[in-house]
Length: 373
Image (tube, rainbow, N blue to C red):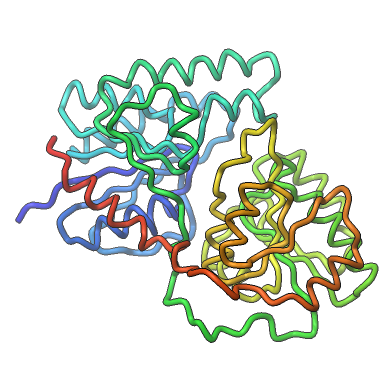
């Protein structure tokens, strides 16, 4: 039987991005019904996977002219592959996906991973004077393409209330944890004498890296067994330069990544070998308050105790499992935190399998199977 060709495409994610490959790509490919093609920027960590073909894009910076022309390259890949289903992972591919749908016919699915317009207005990625214009352009594309989008996938439940352009054909598929191997319930955490804290994922001021570093310093002053491992990629050079400057004389802080992408397997290994993980993402005018971060799913699925910023929505989530020590990074008593770390028992209730991807995969497969381009 001839397999249906599916494209999963992004500009700002690597072709081995965990949502595109490990979650969407593998789940679809394992049905042996689809020929999956993944488009993203190149990665050195690609592994061969049955029924999945990779189409790497050349590298580019976030504020480069070449970025403006990358959608054209993606369109050319569309023409070469001739997909029947396209899952666009970013607003930058909306117009070329629309064009392909009009010219050649295809099911058009928009996987909304961020509230892009709101992010642009509230972060420091783009120059201040350009923010409102770029945000307006992004939202205009989302409105213009609405009549042609067959289905919307939302990575966060809260987007259903935030995004005005959505249609009734919308499904929430959260970014839950996809284990690289079976989770071992008897897994032993860090076996060393040190108490290892981790900060994983995107390294940025907005994600609370400097607050995590400050807390670590305070805890280390009381307990020199404390160490911090930072594992992830930092997109903003100013944040990376500041971080390297702040940790250069701290032998109890290590950095894996920073100026390069870290394989997801190394992030998972760091989580599984740590004693506590930081979740200190800043609210940013309420933009992040109700989002269930991928990091929360990763940590709870691996039963990693969490040092958690005092966000009520995340506190409620973690209380389901008794997973966290809640604190304000700017007003906490280090001695109290140390005592809680030594005396608390975690994951004494709830079912952490709710944080695993297998709860979301059936929704994705059902959606794909119902599409009739």
